[in-house]
Length: 192
View 1 (tube, one colour):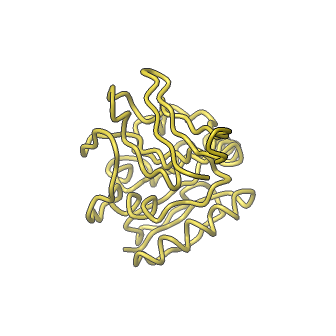
View 2 (cartoon, rainbow, N blue to C red):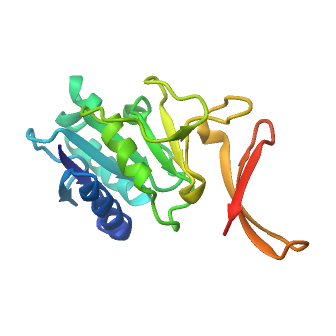
């Protein structure tokens, strides 16, 4: 699968990490720091790393030439958005399936790369995803070692309502990484 990884130079570290993971699972990755989603009709999938830097470049593209031609019609089905932070999405991208990194300072899980391939046009096997996942799921959240979440396993709200948290259990002298649901309070943890 030929995958165009579109990102801004400010996001090079995360792009490099994701590129390595995608290659590890067999994708032919083309890295692109030009205009967001610059034209290439040979791509099977386009992965757009979304951040404050990408939003600024997206705004410039929109102002100069309108919505990139790659994203009109059926091309949006080939776009997978990876949110690196909480930078708001423009209306033109609000309906695109996406993966949200709960903490961009944490290493990405290999499951993130597998989910990108699955969400793109080359539907492969679905990696282990916690919560209620279907082909209509819009957002998958990567909580590193705690795994990928489509929704809260208890109440079913979107994974956008799940948040990472780090704490110390002083009684057992251990540092913990948690994922907590903002709707029902459900949580899960692993050692840090």
